Amino acid sequence: MIGYAVGSLPIGYLVAHSASGVDLRRVGSGNVGAANGYRTGGLRLGIAVMLADAAKGAGAVLLAGGGPAAMAAGVAAVVGHIYPVWLGFKGGKGVATASGVFGVLAPWPTAIAAVAFGVTVARTRYVSLGSIVATVLLPVVEWSRPGPRAVDVGATLVAVLILFRHRRNIARLWSRTERALGT
Image (tube, rainbow, N blue to C red; front, side, top):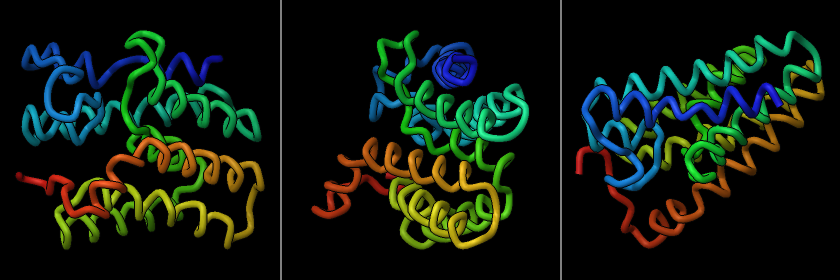
């Protein structure tokens, strides 16, 4: 419950609203995450939302302590970010929050996924494609190394959820109608 409560805090919405009076739910993609913050409010807003959302994920894990409870809190934080009670269960896509969760629980796989995200976005200018690549890569890398199986399972569950939230982006990428960064 604590993980969901922390994850569901609509920090991206609040940051955007207080910084520039923008309601992220009503502009751009309608998503309250970092990519929409960047598109609608610029680089500083996008970075602020990304850091805040990552902090929610890390905070939920750290509050839970260690072991399987920490992984459960991390998964719950991502679910809370995607389906926040405060915004009518319409939140972000969970990528930044998941990066905070796994940055604490699996730092090396997260670093590898972050590099893959950056390279993909730099080469293609598609944030959604970078998110998808990182989302798929993280559990693959996590499962390939020794460590707690709870983190492997959690990474897989979160990946499935994030890919589900990106289903429209996947369709637009496939049909070549997805918006590139800066357009």
